[in-house]
Image (cartoon, rainbow over all chains, first blue to last red; front, side, top):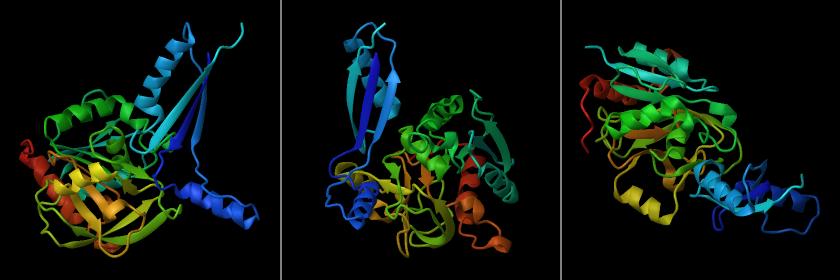
Amino acid sequence: MRATVLVRPKPGILDPQGEAVESSLRHLGFAVSGARVGRLVELDVDAPDADRARAELERMCEQLLTNPLIESYEISVKEVGG
Amino acid sequence: MTARVAVVTFPGSNDDRDALQALALLGAEPVPVWHEEERLPDVGAVVLPGGFSYGDYLRCGAIARFSPAMRAVSEFAAARRPVLGICNGFQVLCEAGLLPGVLRRNASLEFACADVDVRVEQADTPFTESCAPGDVLTIPIKHGEGAWFADGELLDTVERGGQVVLRYAAGNPNGSVNDVAAVVNERRNVMGLMPHPEHAVDPLLGPTGGLPILESLIAAAGARTPVLA
């Protein structure tokens, strides 16, 4: 299973990186607002089906991939051929 | 008897030697501990030093918390023995759930390196016993991710419980909520701080605001009794 975990700063949490990116984009002349910077983790999960892969990924997020105080996450799983 | 204090070295720690040296300067017997060691030596306190454990990958301290030595440190903390985390050590303790909150990127997004003044808010901890509330200590900071953060409810609990031990007193260098520079756990035997007391013990090298903190820790380590909050 090929999995993607999208980690985002929680809504309402100050995101200085997002602010700096937004301000740089504005300096370049782009009309943007609300920029937030997160993190993308891609990995192969050895699991018999997508549900079990998802359950494993939930545990990974809780134990290591995210800090629940400041981050939320979104998991997507895709079966790869072969 | 000489107080024995362990200093844990993770891959990427770089203030472990200063911590060992400062403890020795103050009359303690420092005991280096490698992160792969599953048991702590016979010590009265533990220091987690500053640096960039595991390259600060993912989040600062997020990977170091799973090292074998950290399991031993958690047990040591559960037995109410004193544990001090400095800078990266503070980040590790937050990630390990031994301290409340989390350290985030500095609000300025810049690495902060300066001597800062911190005010002692709580003197009834093993780390500040030789201070009085209101004392101002000058201690250097050097970090890119030192903005301590807790959300509304957790922040209320920490403030109400008197868990904020040090606050920045003359300008906040990193954007931490409520100017927090150091917090303790509820049982008051685990503290993390962003300033580096181990760099502030010798007048030849600058301010000496780290002395009362390390002296308090060494006294607690020598007493060999659990911290009873």
